[in-house]
Image (cartoon, rainbow, N blue to C red):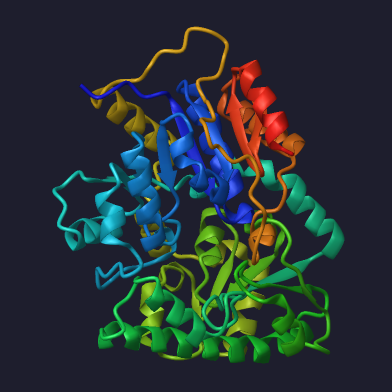
Length: 463
């Protein structure tokens, strides 16, 4: 019989602005199910995976790199689970999930994906029996629901105060304007990591399509921005590059443009909530705008096979030219509710697995709890001391390198506590949770305290 597992949920993250709030929502619900939660920057959690109390390891993606971590976690006795942060914004019409590693899939006990179309395509692509993939809304999308989005209202109000009425323009040039290098360097890195086979001419052709699409999108935005500012002089134009993009290049490309601010602070949600309208180029924020009941227009300036892989142009009105965008912006500013038709809304609900009665996070936690109960069971904790333990060789410090410090800056414990309290109040969950550090940018959220011996080791380990 398999040994009983501790009810500890591990939530590694990479980009705090995109992931932290959704993980704190998951944390709030997991705590109500009796879990303790370890969350924070993934690099330290990954480094220590064999040196912590086994529990449930939830990966944010299923890449070649994730395959190694999921395999290590499984060998160390964890239940392994995964979501895929990219799939909610995609329409994988060809059922080819090239970025997903078969080894990562094999090493994962539970896979949570949204949408009947993508979930079925994933199941067929990897030869699963029905039920192997669990359909559930990604917790990141739960945050956009009416009952939860109020947690972002203070931030949205601050953006309105600072910028007044503004039109938000989101770029999405993660392949051709990346912190990680040029498109050629990015592609070579993907090949070197074993994610794609360079002899696969069809897939290599798709990457060329992506590159050409982004070049066309960039040119279209550079043409649009000054004309948009001229057409709407009573609105500020805010350009918000994707988190993976180099902001300095946009500053160079748009130098001298009137009434334009380039801002990349904070998460996307409050920016969308504060904006009068959103304009984007096949960005997932166009899908988020539908969830937030905010008008969004998708600029698709050129015919390209790569466009077919994005959900946003399936559920947002599609514009081809600068003139089209300006005319449509006038329309949605005057009548925001005219932006989407009933077919767009129905497609959104299907692709995101929207359930009006139950959060995706709740569905995930119930499935995890049930899986653990039927695979060895959960160990009981009878005292007020946490079950989490750092074992021999545990590392308490992980220095930042490359852009890691920007992607995951230091965690504000007071802000985390406030967010957990907000979520608990909105969901009617009254948990008395302690927030304790487990190392650089990693936290334990639990109603129980760390044992004194662990606290002493932590104090020594900081040095």
